[in-house]
Length: 244
Figure 1 (tube, rainbow, N blue to C red):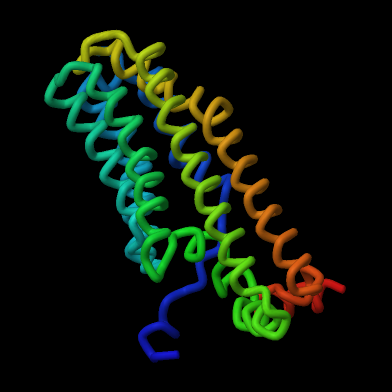
Figure 2: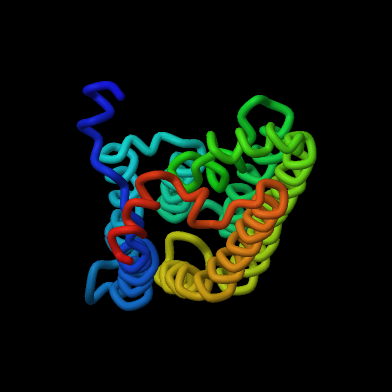
């Protein structure tokens, strides 16, 4: 480990903070403060989108999370702001909402043809699992090829979750955001769409992700004979030991 990497703080998931900063606060600002008696259309849009944009940039800079998906998230918020501020046809918002998860899904599929499939980076990685131990057990049992086949199938499932998000994002945007961009109604509808997208898209996608991880874990257990505790990443295993 280099001195530079030692100085990077560990990234601990904070789902409630993410939910508050990226969904709830922007939605409230857009829906409640877009009137002329409050912030007005332009300032409400700028202030509302500043929260997810600022949070995304903070995560990228502080934790060096310079990955494809994190960068796309920041770009997505920037494009939303551009559509509203430049009064571009609101139909482009639906296209943008679908394009971002679709781009990630395509990247997942393309990555399966490379040495570094994204499913390994996001689900099967040393921060979660003791991949070295798993690979050693697979090699000893002669199951490496079968595991690679299951990992490829998990990649297809993974890409499918983003396809689901793309379709639902497009439908939701077309259904809710119907007013011209640059208006108070557009801001309010954008806030409503942001709020509704969490239970309608984010939660189902999260459930699908958990199901994919469970499929991957079942494959590891079947092919290596290890329990989950035996193949957790060393730092996670230590935490479990301290709890027990």
